[in-house]
Structure formats: structure tokens, C-alpha cells
Image (cartoon, rainbow, N blue to C red):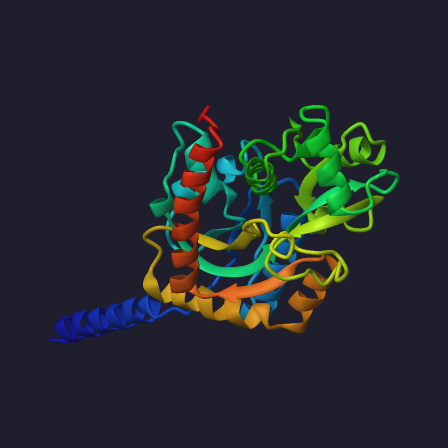
Length: 317
């Protein structure tokens, strides 16, 4: 009889422990955050600000792991291979999800390999010249490029990047012709632009502001707080372009309760004083979207980028 009672009690304790484990609050340990860019990059700095606020709210560490390379696709290949338990996520722009599939062959993932947890900020692009450039306004630059087709050179952070596509669309629809020079990143563009080796560049405001360059137009519908006197492409009668849509992503198959927790915390983080102060300092625009709306925006951008890349005759490599 005693053995039966002991067995019964042991079974009950096992069920209780199993139930407690199933109801364990998330996160109960550190969450690895993949940032698919090098340390010190604008996205990396914003990712660290986001992760820091997540840690403050949840009480758990959100350490950053930089997995840069191949237009951010290396980091997303790592995320796709991660266990979908909520303890590996990524903070990134839309580039590896809505652009890379159209310009890079044989990716190890698709858009459906991930769940967009939340959008947290927008990285807005602009048209820049060096501070010593003879072109003081957008109109002066456009007139010069038009009068001397193919003479001028311009830079971006790589074929298929958000600034490359934005400027390429502007040039094509404006009937302008200039030679594109792709660079590894914005730090490599700066000295060439400042010395006027490159006539102009399409680049992020976060990466260029205050570094010896002058903005002539912003690829947006509304003016940017860093350059309130600089007109937008929309004001100038051109397509506004889409900013870098930055947010948090998790592997497909991550439990619903975990996704809901991350989404809720993300809403709190993007409203926090710490994150907003970091965004202001880094010239980034805070913009929260939940899972459903972020997913919808990314899928629309995927379709738009496919159409634009085809129109620009950019071939997958």
C-alpha cells in the first residue's frame, strides 16, 4: 500500500513540475540577437539600443551577435537554422528579406522562413554631395547630370541595397544617366564623396549626417527631423522611395505565446525614453508596427521590389 501511495505522489509531483515547466514565463534565460551587419554600423547601434531596453523590461540579457556579410543574408541563414524557441532572434532591415531574394540566387531561406515580430524604426535615405561640391541644391545637381549624361559618378552601399534602388528609380524616371559605383558600406563612400571623386551618393541619413556632406533631397514623403530644410523627393515630384524597414524577426515555428510576448515588449521598448533618445541621437525615425501590420508591409515591399528590380534590369547573381 505504501508503495502505491509513493508511486501516486511521485506521479503527481511529476505532473505538477511538467505543468510548471509548460507555463514557464518567457524569457527565462538570455536571448541571442543576431544583427547581420558589422559592429558600429547604424543598424547595429540601434539594435543594441533595442536589445538593451528589452533586457531592462524582461530582466534577461539580449546579447548581440554580429553575423555580417553577403548583403545581410549570412545572418538570416543563421536565424533560419536556429531552434524556433524564442531564444534566437534577429534585428535587421528588410534588405535580406524583400530585396535579396530577387538579386541573390540560391538563398538558404525564403520570406516565409521567418515571423516579423515588430517594426521598430525606419532608416531614411537621402541624396548627398560633399560639403565642397559646387552643387548646392537638388535642382543644380539634376540639371548638371542631365546636361552631361554619363559623365558623373554616384555611390551606394551596394547593388540591390535600399539606397541603390531608390536612386536608380529616381534616375530612370527622371531620364538622368550617371555611372553607379557600388561600395561595401557608407564608411567607404564618405572619403570619396568628401573629396568629390564621386559626384553624389544615395545613403542613409543616420550614416552620413554631420560627416562633411550636404543633403540635397530626402527619399521620403515627409521631411526628416535631422534636415528640416531639405526637400523630400515627393515634394520635388518624384517617387519617395521606401526607407529601411527595421525590426525584430524570429524563426518560423516559434510558439505563439513567445511571439506575443516579444511583440508586446517591443511596443513598450519603442515607447521608452531610452530607445527614443538613442534613435534621436542616431538620426533614426522610431516607427512601431505589430506582427500583422509589419508582415503586411514587408509582403507589399517584397512585391514592389520584385517589380522595381525587373524594371531596372538588375540580374540575380
